[in-house]
Length: 178
Image 1 (cartoon, helix red, strand yellow):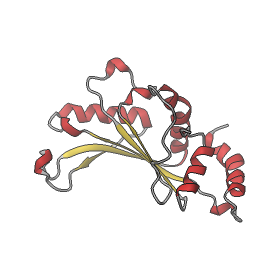
Image 2: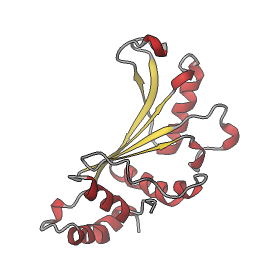
Image 3: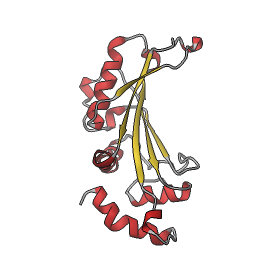
Image 4: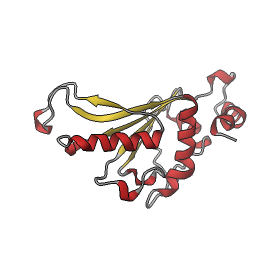
């Protein structure tokens, strides 16, 4: 059973009872997953952003778009319009496949993993996870990486608050630390 089928058949009824909702349409769901990677101090190296782009494309199965600086920041040596990162927005079937792979394969592969923090929720119930290195993802081979880079995942939900967001993600199999 895929994560989406599990969500429809098991998680929605359980959340409806747990959160005390009268209608199935009130139950929170995941709208989108955004994967970001900034290139940071390697902004001068042209081939580094291409490597990051390939890695993100391998991880998500979708071609990322390059983000540009909106304004110049002299302290960080960034010019306006300079490419400073890549981003991918996942929705629908691809999003659920990515989340399933994240919870079942990637999290167990993270070094010294004791669960994810439940402090990363914002007021609307959206969740943010940061990875210092992309080696935990099974698509990335250790010998193909010349320089390490991190990435950020933002899970955007329709939850009204932190409690609903945490309930949704914990039912979906996210391993929160105790």
